[in-house]
Length: 181
Image (cartoon, rainbow, N blue to C red; front, side, top):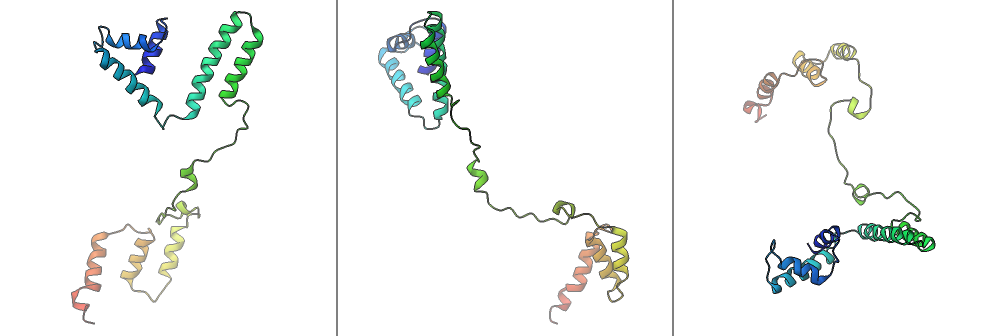
């Protein structure tokens, strides 16, 4: 909040001080007592400056922006050498002179393996098989019964899968009558 008040007061062209912020908090829109205004000021500073999740790069960019503003002011005053030094400082703060290396995020390095179950050959990168040729191969096997042959064709996606028929077959094949065997 104090940071926002400082920015707001800077836009209005007012001098930013602790007293100015406290005076603003005591004024009409906020209407805080002197004690409460000082407490809000202190709490805001503590809150902002104890945040661990503000990255150092964010602060570096903030300071670089200030250095650029100072450089513009110094340049307008005619001191080119000092303006150059301030711009160089801004570039250093932004990391322009650092060697850039590609950072790999930690979550990509420590990924758990993922198991994917699929019946599609295309998902595995294997070319599709000719269904007619597969059906002819299954029909050419003489030792298997017709109902098992139909189940194999359903599993190979040659024929449409009939869940009801398969359940009835499983009940008949593995039903309670055959448990004692």
